[in-house]
Length: 105
Image 1: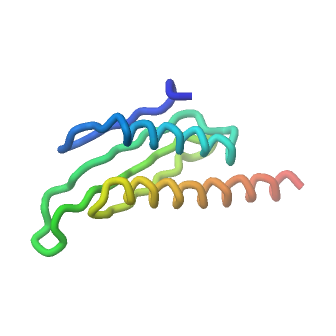
Image 2: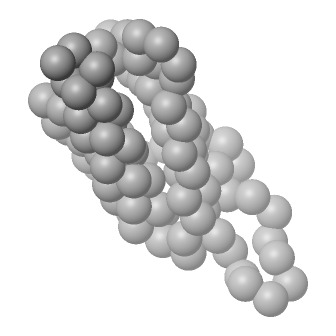
């Protein structure tokens, strides 16, 4: 499933361990929807904020039939940002597939 997923790092080095986590989570998303066409995960370290210190942003966009779904999450830990972004995306996917099932009946 890795072929249809892009993982992009901006302003910090890529991590093989983080890539593994991301690819596993993307594969898990396919359980909730069979209409995922592609996935793109962008991880970046936006510029330092005076008050907040360093924050990482995980943005995930998945192309599904209909309209793409996009979520972003900020956190001082890149791992938590990724985890939270994927759980938000999971919720949205479940809602979308529930709507589709209702539309069919």
